[in-house]
Image (cartoon, rainbow, N blue to C red):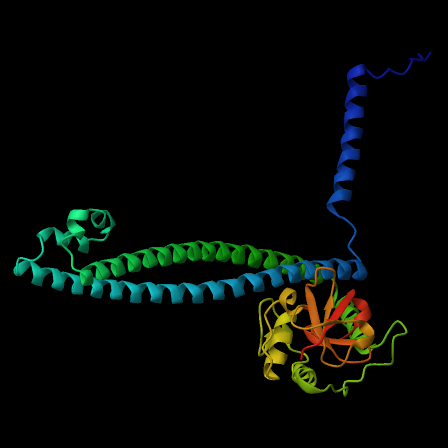
Length: 346
């Protein structure tokens, strides 16, 4: 007769082992899910890329400002160094003349040899001695005072040059930091764009072309008219900018074959005979501010609350600008950016 045995109950150790295995399986599944995040959509990529481009452009305008400061400091330092060199030569000549005068009088027994001390780098301490001054003629006293004044002026100029050299070093450091920031943001943007398929990138380009041709959106006017012309310097600047349509956007470039936003504006107005400053922040003060309804072709138009983007008004609610590394120099509907105000250049 067959025996009926009760099934063997799992031991506590076996239960613990099975529980641990189940937990490990759940953790592994969770890790695998985290390791393979969902691929961002075309619109998500575009939004992130636009944000990175905006951050890079902010850094670009600060970079441009620092580079302008660098150029200014280098020019001022060069002028100061030339001035110091000329002043030192004049001082040496004055000392030589004083020395010749003192030597002649010493040979004739008119002046004590202690006069030579006045020809040192710091004669002030000797001028305080009445016994020395009493031995000097009025002409010699005048010469010594001139030497003193020249020495003081040289010391001040050297101190000023040293301060500007320190400012220059700080500016160069800032330039390096801003350049690194720009490169990082642009690299992140390019990595995101590379994650798109060829079809998605083409659709993105099609969307951009639609934005460029849809002038006057938002009920503000008609379609883009590339034949719009302005008058005066503004009209000339707009005409020159049109010749650069399709040119590349490169941070820090001011033409003639690649531009950033303020670089294009500066170049176009420069060709029209008007010298503008280099950054959006300073260009915003180059003329009177005007509202949207007052804009005429060729006026400067500024966007974003911190004014880090500028273009040329092209009529029909359209801006001609160096947009970003992906779009380059192109037309675009102004409604796609937060307009702040226009500036009219006389």
